[in-house]
Structure formats: structure tokens, C-alpha cells
Length: 77
Image (cartoon, rainbow, N blue to C red; front, side, top):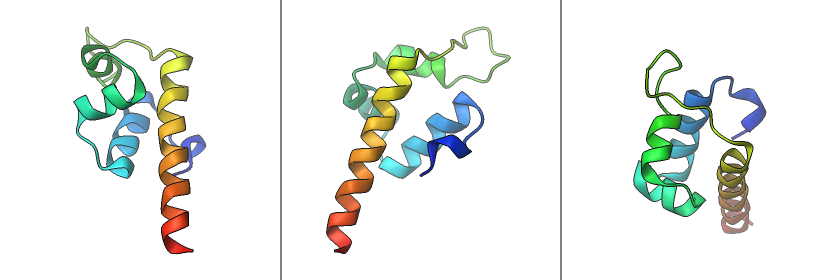
């Protein structure tokens, strides 16, 4: 998954969840994010509960995606 191609925070999180094949709470734990915080990050932008995701949280999810990609490359090789 090319994280630069995903436009919104909500889309990024949905794409990451799908790519990693994780439930929301498992994704939060793996990234070191409180599950409730992740829920707020994935809310629509116009939601009262929406919160902007800190750069560190986004980077943690990007790191999970990179590790997943490397793992899949090793399986193919």
C-alpha cells in the first residue's frame, strides 16, 4: 500500500486495516495507540468526535505497513 496515495485520515486508516488484516482494536494495540483514540481518528471529518491523528500515531501505522510489506516479500522470494 502506498500511503502517499491515500488522501484522508479516515481512508488511510481503513486501507491500513484492510492491508494488515486486523480488527480495529488489534491495529490500535499493535501501533501503540489507545483503541478509543483510534476510534476518534477514524471518525468522519465532520463528526463531533473526530480528532486529528498525531504524526507519531500515523508513523507507527506506517511502520506496521512497512513490516507487513517486507514480510510478504520474503514469502514470495
